[in-house]
Structure formats: structure tokens, C-alpha cells
Image 1 (cartoon, rainbow, N blue to C red):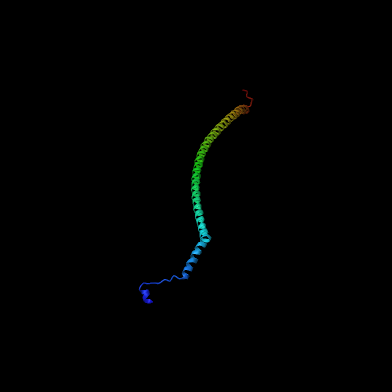
Image 2: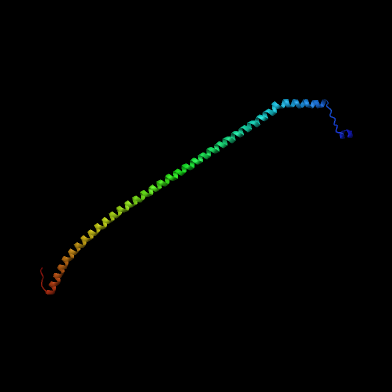
Amino acid sequence: MLGAAMSGGISIDFDKTFVLQMGIFALLIVVLKPLLFDPILKVFEERERRTDGARSEARSMQEEAGQLLRRYESELERVHRVAGEERDHLRAETTKLEAEILREARTVSNRIVDEGRKKVETEVNAIRFDLGRQTEQISREVAGRVLGREVSR
């Protein structure tokens, strides 16, 4: 027997058990294919289809998010530009208003100072007039006392 195996000859017996095992194998394939293999393959295909669909949907959502972000950034830039222009406009307007208020304040203060000067000048003139009369009266009194008689104008 060892010599036969060495010479390269292998003998395979096809008996009834081999045929029975092949029949059972064929029967299992015929029975299990529609009951087990086909449903499992359908589940795998459905999972693959849904996965591809979810990936493509995620890709499109990512692209849409990118577009929204670009739109948001451009709108934000436009708002910053408009706000800057408005700020510059308000600054110019404020400077103009400030200059106008200062001009009016100077005018009013100059008018008040001029009125005050005129009033002071009027009062000084009135006081000088009164002093002049009083000086004249005092000098007459002093002269009358010095001379011992009343002095007339």
C-alpha cells in the first residue's frame, strides 16, 4: 500500500455515501438559496444602496453648506462695508454739526460779551457822571470851608 501511494496512484472510491452527500449538498443549495442567501444578498444590496445614497446626500449637503457659508461671508462683508460708510457719514455729519454749534456758541458768546461791555461802559459813564457831580459838590464844600464862605458856580 505504501508503494502504491508512492508511485502516484491514489484511488478514490465513489460509493453511495459520496453520492448521498452530494445530493444533500445540492438539496441544501436549492433550499437555502431562496430562503437564506437571496434575502441576505438583498439586505446587503439595500444597505449598500442606502449607504451610497446617504453619502451622496451628505456630499450635496456639504456643498450647500459651503455655498451658504460663502453667501454669509459675502453678506457679512457687505454689511461691514455699509456700516463703515454709514459710520464715516455720521462722523462727517457730527463734525459738521459740532462746527455749527461752536460757531453759534461763539456768536452768542461774542454778543453776550459785547452786550456786557456796552452795559459796563454805560455803567462806567453813569458812575463817572455821578462822580463828576459829586466831585464838583465836594470841591465846592472844600473850597467853602477853606475860604470860609459859600462858593457858587
